[in-house]
Length: 165
Ligand code: FES
Image (cartoon, rainbow, N blue to C red; front, top):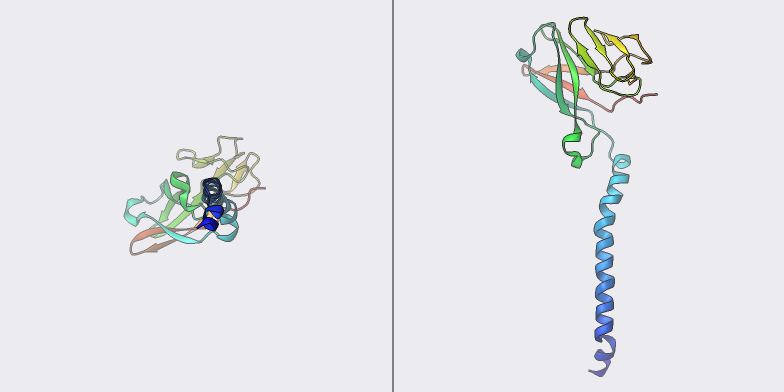
């Protein structure tokens, strides 16, 4: 009895309790922080076919913006894990999908239907309807996604964005 009292008096108990709380708090904070830094290294971005709508939704010859989840984002990314592409229906079942990111420094490009060009608002790069650079500082054409038709629906194969250099 006397021995137990010596081991677990009030000061010792409070001290152990505070140290335990501190340890639990460190673990609770440390795991998400570690996950944030190590997650992108451990978890390679997946290539996934993303459904962007039925074939009939798209008119032949028109280029429209379609949204999809970006495969490289973290699960807790919220609305920031969504991105978009420019999708053109070239003919019956022939589609072309362009990344929205300019190959200069990554600003989103705009499609101008009348002159049929992609225009980057940041530094003025211009791409023709096939994504080829026709003016400005962009060093290469717009990146293209693979497109396929499955059960009369259009799917885009998302993959990591090419590095912009
Ligand atoms: Fe598009 Fe610079 S980011 S021209």
